Image (cartoon, rainbow, N blue to C red; front, side, top):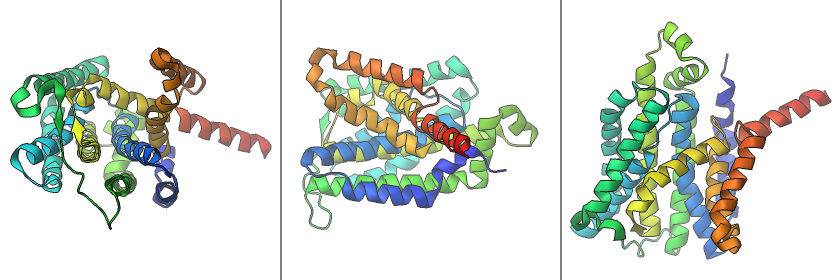
Length: 317
């Protein structure tokens, strides 16, 4: 019997909706920037959803993988003159190897022990970025000159809009394909019950490790896109607060939902722009809105609304 959580990842519907969104959303330069950041962070949250929504693992260290991709491109391009595209291709397998190495021991932990272990990894990485001034630029960060990049003659902002939009669509397709594969079915079984999955002969630890590695690669790819689009990176962009943001985006949007991943990312990208009129109360109001969302929609926005629509449809029949 097909797991009900797999339906939000149906490739034709999601990819068609993504193409429409990517083609029609932005009009101004500001909207282009907001949409591009939305695509980047949605890619991260898709990977986080695989880890949290299916493997049931909480990681507070994914900001480190975001920073790994960003700083690999920034350092290699700015200090050694290497191609950012080559550096991106190199950073993805590197992230996979690092995730595999640290994932093997820490994924044996559960609950808050696992959260603290990943938090420690993220903290150490952020400290290295801040203190290695001669390599990373320290707290001031690093700049990257990508202004000359054009795609089919478009301006750099529009070029990165299409590149990051394409990366998001590709990530959605790959995740949909993964969840329809034997590996994906193992992860869905783990989501329902780890004990039952183990009884059926599924290597639960190995499946969790695969989810962690894939999630880390998605996050690293998004970090590469972020620094090439924004052309600047600081340790703050790869710190603990960034990791917590990724987790919050995933939970608020809804675990096990691709559309929820985009909604969760959109709240953190778009909503703060509307709250700037409140000045010093901006963060407090944003926090209050998030609390209200989680109280009224405890399963996340997308799953809660989908459940409400199903109940309405059933009651009307």
